[in-house]
Image (cartoon, rainbow, N blue to C red; front, top):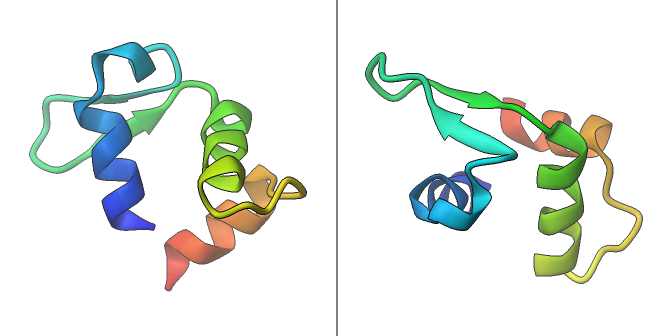
Length: 59
């Protein structure tokens, strides 16, 4: 999950859904639904939503 998020954070085309806050390694999910949708596409899990993504982030 962290590699996926880092990929989005370094991709300028994703700035509308996730970006660095400028405070260390802290980032902000501007559009969590879009981030979850992209994760679902990446993992071929179209039913991915923010709730499932947030569970994965905790581990």
